[in-house]
Length: 168
Image (cartoon, rainbow, N blue to C red; front, side, top):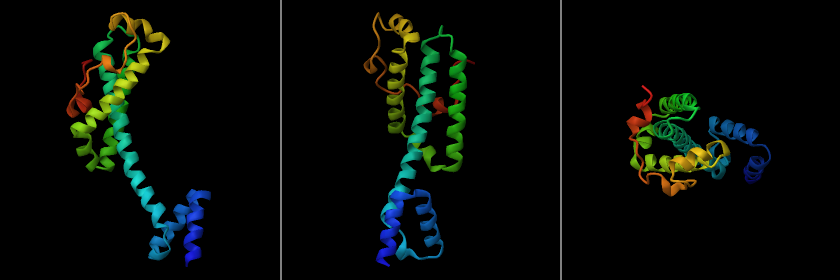
């Protein structure tokens, strides 16, 4: 038995898909003593973490688009921002349909703030791109902005993230 468990642990490093299939087979057959519990538990934890990161990234995309729309009105890509916001909202709704408990986590002020922080990083990087430098300099008193040049607190509520349409 010890050899089978060790082989399964080695399989985790060599052939992940086969490792998944073998653990699934063992669980279905109720051969719990042979399951690679250490790696399986890490993988389950990783799934939860990846879902949380997925909602953060979608909220980041939405907030970044909203901020751009509200603050850089003469930029030629404004219609693209609307599409990006709409796509991110659809993806968020799909995540919430599959995992409703994540909606409560997304509504949490800490999650909103974390997503805003990611948005600020993205906005500062976007404004440093060559086509946007002139825009950045005109809006930020002759200099390229840093993360400190944006509001420190998230300016959007969860409802605004999901529904606000400043273009209407």
